[in-house]
Image 1 (tube, one colour):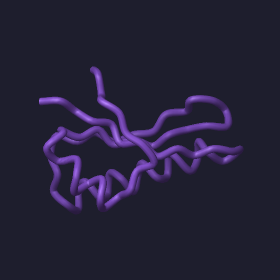
Image 2: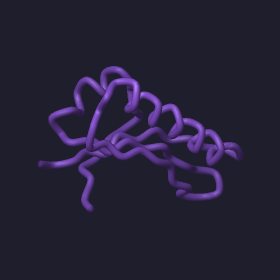
Image 3: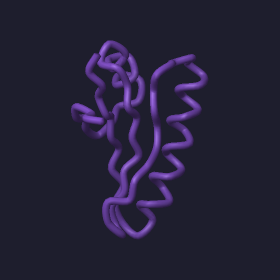
Amino acid sequence: MRKLKLIWDFKGPDGIKIAEHHAIHLNEFVAAENYEGITTGFEALHESHAIAFLITPEDQMKPIRDALKPHRGQVHIE
């Protein structure tokens, strides 16, 4: 099954810290909703741009997207 990466962008001097903190909340959401097969994390793309992300199987994407409102998404290629 195809996986999708939901992405939240954080820019500015505190972007990395904010993305790291947002990833904690994404992980808490996954645990509270008892989702399985989902990966969360954060990544610094540049010193002033970082992302928090959630990788989910495509069949679980819509309720997660509607609840969390990511900034963007893409097909995840492992």
